[in-house]
Amino acid sequence: MAQVQVRDLDISFGALKVLEKLNVTAEDGEFLVLLGPSGCGKSTLLNAIAGLLDINGGQIFIGGKNVTWEEPKDRGIGMVFQSYALYPTMTVEKNLSFGLQVAGVKKDEIRSRVGRAAEILQIEPFLKRKPANLSGGQRQRVAIGRALVRDVEVFLFDEPLSNLDAKLRGELRVEIKRLHQRLKNTVIYVTHDQIEAMTLADRIAIMRNGVIQQLDTPHIIYNKPQNLFVAGFIGSPSMNLLRGQLTTVAGKRVFSAGGLSMPLDRYEFTSGAPDAAPAVLGIRPEHVAIGDDATKMPFAVEGEIEVVEPMGSDTVAWTKVAGQSFTFRCESEVQLHVGQKLKIGFDPARGSLFHEETTNRL
Image 1: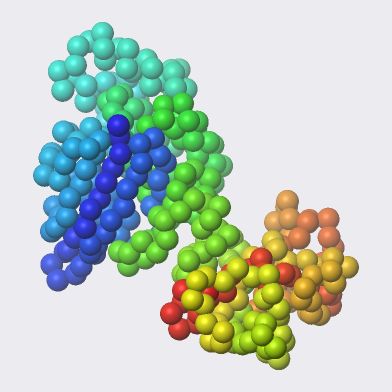
Image 2: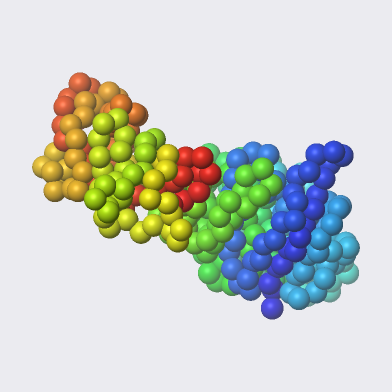
């Protein structure tokens, strides 16, 4: 059992409260990602779980054991940092084995663990090299291997890919996912990169100002964000957010903005949602249809293209709907140009509606 539980965690730096009464659980074998902007408290939470920070209140359990005041070495965790933090004068093999030697592990066991980690991470050809002779991706593999040889059930990753270029990040992301699928360890992974979070996580905890805004699967978070912050943070390009008014006409709820009315007949409202309120309607760019397809949608309007961004696999374009900036995504084969006028349509029921004042989902 390698469940990680954080209960009522309080952490302050002087008068500044970073985390207050925070509760979160990573289930046995789960890949949990802590996602949020810089300064939201995600690395602070990870360091507290690792035992690298003193806490002001609360408890931390790993594998059912209260480790709140245990030393990091006694918590049964392996940690990978943003910085590779390798010993420059040691070979890869020495970097992997050094911690085990200090811990008094037998030589045969060390050799076995190092060999296993090198095989899993495909760094066997580099065992006799020093870090200076490795690429960034190879160094990060070694850093992961150093955690792996500890043979623990919980791994903590603190933005391990942020120092790498885009291609290497993509490659190592796949390697980390394969590693988790093979070993089934519990993983808590900190990142500010939403692509890493969406592709790696079983569940994502989105944080803001030390508070978890939403904790759910990538699919639910992407399609049913709980508030405006989550809606705007997840997705690239960002979700379109149209400000307007929720009203009820002839017993049916309608969203109005800029003189346009959008039907909400099939929209799934949350329990207790009001019949009228200042509201924001969120529509994902990929849920927008154009041209002839737009006329088949419950809502359609003519728009003029202001900016076109060819992305290779697809194209992103900017226009206006109800006088507000609006983005849509289409296949790269579709020819678009600035100043072009075309029909733009979408199904409001597929969107997300938020109360403008509370910012919560309706």
